[in-house]
Length: 174
Length: 191
Image 1 (tube, each protein chain N blue to C red):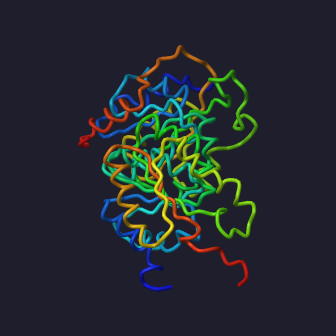
Image 2: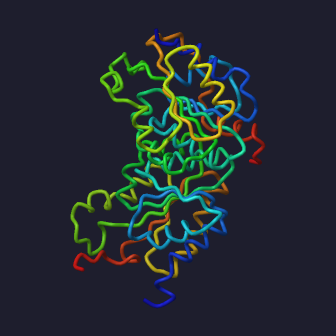
Image 3: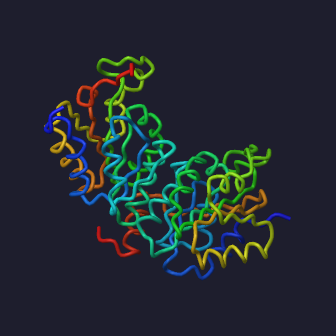
């Protein structure tokens, strides 16, 4: 991978820093591995490992009540775990910034990833989230910046969808 | 003799001080907190079942100089047990999670909750690494918990064993945006 294509997680991290994100909730995911490492290594970001993604929706609401900005990292399957908790963000207009790595949409080896992966976009739209889909490394920073502005400028929900094409397919043979 | 819920809430919040932020969980604990006296520093939950403890965690991390008390019911806590594991590895010094445990789902017709059949929330919290866990079964222990809350220095988990009495509902504001905005304004956060 060239420096331009392979370092998009670093661009994402820089956007989080520029956006003054102070809490990052996540359920570990291979597509987010580099970004999680960067967040864990940063003194000004509190990294919060979650047992399930819906915890992160509540965490972000609490952070905002206390005047801090949070972001939530998850895989597409995790969005399904969040749906009722998204009521919290919608009812109270809590800012919610999500970065979702996709599975089940492009050269997917594991069919169990497909049912949730295939409904991520409509689910997000039904939950009144703004969706920014990214297919190429050069689009990552711009989409993330627009999402930060939308979420915290107007107390709204947004998701940056990091497509499977961007991340690359999971390698099953070692 | 189990404690009466409204009296227990009143004892915990008496003379609360401006640095105490309270997240009452969905259901009866929200009515209890409203009955104890409405306060801009209460963020009542009318939904988001299973989310109270995590809202408290995000708030406690964002406001390290203030104390945060999540006061919720056994059913609400059971829906988000994973939060205790998450809190167990974060350990904010300023967070207390207090569960009013009556062993039933009072809002929905008194169906038994898991705690009535032996699920021990204190044991769960302790196993998640929360060292300060207190089981409150009488007035003296309740007074100790109120003192512990005033002098909070480590993540605290408490189970308050309450009776199944259901006092008349006292309903707080239910506009979520209004609750959020007044809470933030009360602690000096610019819109």
